[in-house]
Amino acid sequence: MKRHFDEEKKFFGIDIMASEAFSNAWEGFLEIVEPHLPEYLHWNEICWKFVLYLAEVRLLIHRNTRGMEHWEIVTNTVMYSFAVFIGLLLLKWFIRWLFFNDKSLKTRIVETFFAVVKKIPYLSGKIKSEIDKSLTEMSKTAFPMPDDMHYRTKLPDKPLTEDQLDKEVDCLLSFGKYKWDDGHVSGTVYHGGQDLTRTLTKVYGKFAWSNPLHADIFPGVRKMEAEVVRMCINMFNGDENCCGTMTIGGTESIILACKAYRDRGYANGIARPEMICSDTAHAAFNKAAHYFNIKLVQVPSDKKTFKVDLKALKRAINRNTVLIVGSCPHYPHGIIDPIEEMSKIAIKYRIGLHVDSCLGGFLVPFMEKAGFKLPLFDFRLPGVSSISADTHKYGFAPKGSSVIMYNSKELRKYQFHCAPNWTGGIYASATIPGSRPGGIIAATWAALMLHGEQGYVDCTRKIVKTRQFIERELRKIKGLVVYGEPEVSIVAFSSNKFDIFRLSTALVEKGWNLNPLQFPAGMHICCTMQHTHPGVAERFVKDVADEVAILMKDPSGPTTGVGALYGMAQSIPDRSIINQLAIGYLDAYYSTVKLPSQQAEEAKVVEDGTKKEEAKGTGTRNGSIRKRGVKTGNAKH
Ligand SMILES: Cc1ncc(COP(=O)(O)O)c(C=O)c1O
Image 1 (cartoon, helix red, strand yellow):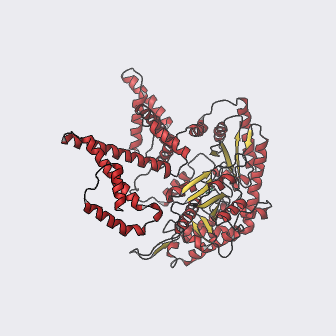
Image 2 (image 1 turned 135 degrees about the vertical axis):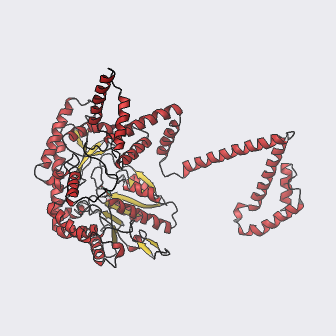
Image 3 (image 1 turned 45 degrees about the horizontal axis):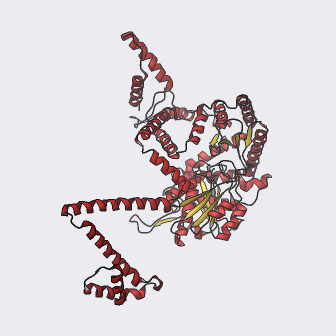
């Protein structure tokens, strides 16, 4: 050791560590520590080299500060330290950007580029003013209200009478321009008919005050929930090991499944769990990834079939993967992913496979009995470890109900949360909320009872036949293309001749409300029981055919109205702008400030103009009138 030290001294030609005492202490320290350290790392050498380098740095500083005043040394030290600090910060940012980021490298580069561009003073001002303009416009147009309707922002001084309440409730019920009950709206309302609504409301009323958090007080609700879950497990051919819980909707079912896989990953020593979804998987997986700090690896779907690209999926699997996701069917194009192949992959790599059947959960299990053949997609496949199915969609239960199922209690336990030491008592809850609406559970149970298997098979037959009819007719329309081979209730389509959002605008004018799609642009209709009523599907395809015929006369015409907004949103490469606008929309949703309608503003312009002309004989300026308009709106909130 001593010999080695002397050699190093010579090698650097400097007198380091003049103190013999230090050298002895150092060697003593190493003798104690060294036997416990891995031999191949040559700790002795590493430590000595470190000390020697430090000494050389010291010498360097000495050389460079020779002949300097004290104040110069102090200022230089401060400046160099500051530069090193900034350098370290930049390095930390870069390392985080490069290695500790869940987004793809391409997304990161694009986002960073736009973030930097937006820092340029001139551009940032311009972009901000454009965004502000759009947000103001949105706040005025997103939720229009008739002139004689106002927000209630304070409790009424005196209670309303039942008559007054009825009047106001009916007015709110008929508020809105779309006629969802006669089939003009895609998806959205999964109505099981007036008779069912009456009965479900009655059942809900009886359990309106119940809460399954207190199962000892409401054992009937617990029984109903356990039964709903078991009935769903049987629909999906689960065995006695399968289990699940009810949740308040598809998103909660998905979020909880993701949490369960994440926590099982943690328990198995995976510190940074990842899940793999196709780009067509529901946005709820994105939300789950965001809430629970799971890395979401998005793989593309096949450009023609819109099924998940299995090769890309396999390539994305690594030792951190805890979950792969298949949809049955997915929301954008109504296509079922190749669940059988995914099950094999899940078994091979020993990872979870979640089947998102939120949308089709009360259609796909009945398709075979309704006469439509499907490949396997449920617990009969050994790789399927969880399934989500929404009772509040084609189960025709009231909104606020869904089911999440697992193939074992071992997996479900990771969904649960327990706080054994809480001063309020031992707290254990199965899902995200604490208290839950027992009324919804009771009404869901009632919906299942009132339909029975036969009821759901009949509804499935009607809905799938309607989808087949619409799909067939749309394929005949020149200028339209149907996306993939839909199998359940959705038909997605676009055009290779004109901007599909022009058709969207035209259909809105005719009272239809479809769902827009992006990347690639398109729209879809999701068939519900409303579309199975006589004449509805025929009216839809006729309206589409008529409008396409008009558009085909001038295929390159401009896109206007609602469609222009969708088109524009797709073409903006900086997605953070879309984020800002979407947040603006949510802000507008919760606003109770009544903004002046277009008509009111125009009327005010005319009125003010007349007054000013009378007083001064001059015209009016829009700006001042706008400001007054907003004030009036504020005063009414
Ligand atoms: C395939 C799919 N998964 C999940 C969801 C989310 O369901 P919810 O809106 O009930 O949260 C939907 C909703 O349409 C869906 O279509």
